[in-house]
Image 1 (spheres, helix red, strand yellow):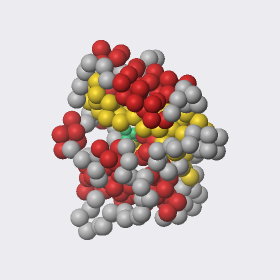
Image 2 (cartoon, rainbow, N blue to C red):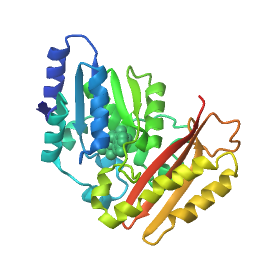
Image 3 (cartoon, helix red, strand yellow):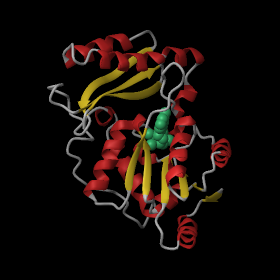
Amino acid sequence: MFIFKKTEDLRNFLQQKNNGTRDIGFVPTMGALHEGHLSLIRMSKSSNSLCICSIFVNPTQFNQAADLQKYPRTTSKDIALLAKVGCDVLFLPHESEIYPSDLDTKVEIAMNGLDTVMEGEFRPGHFAGVIQVVKRLLDITSPSHLYMGQKDFQQFSIIKHMIRTLDLPVNLVMAPTVRAENGLAKSSRNERLTAEQKEQAGIIYKTLSAAGDVLLRKSVDTIEADAIKTLSIPGFKPEYFDIVDGNTLQPVKDVLNTDWIVACTAVWAGDVRLIDNMILKDEG
Ligand code: AMP
């Protein structure tokens, strides 16, 4: 596996390697890699001749300095994992490579309300940081395919919107959420949970599944309120449980007349914030 820390070196490599063809799969990550990330690498490898992964803990998407500081960093373990699954290129930039002082990297597009609900409500500025870093990384890697997880459904929707709005020449592919045996979605943040919290956090998946079971029988408001109650076990604090239209991310008013319905939630387990979601209806 080739490892590049400098944008210029990566660009030079890609120019030589690629020689005009555009068959590159790209997987942006913030490191502390787990099976979820590796599933994206495998997906990328199966459809492209070159797979690039980036590890960059992006400061502009953290709205709390403490969260940025506490974010796990396990670079040597990550490198070993990436090499093991056959990733071709790792981009491991310093902040100054992503945000050079003489470059305006901000992306200003109308977000049509996608960024003000759910995560946007509780993490102001988060998605402005996400689109900024993904746009910059796409500019550097010029991939044909971009792989992102359903685990971060709102992030996926917003990147999809950015690609469409800016007409970027890349195909966005959604990868299913990889889960632990008890249903807990794999996440770098799980490293900070105790064994007991990990076990208890299986309730998030169970609650999402239960919402799907009663979607046609109960009102959306009742399902959401019940879910908040179920998730409020000692040591856990749900922030939101929203059943939304998968296209607009706005609350679902009419279940029968909405083709794509997704339940999204954020739950604090102690001081660790976990997010998850489940597609409850997909007839699109
Ligand atoms: P992160 O390192 O958390 O920024 O995640 C990098 C990419 O991996 C994002 O596209 C995430 O949606 C995806 N991802 C994170 N966790 C999972 C998971 N459990 N299953 C599938 N994809 C995931």
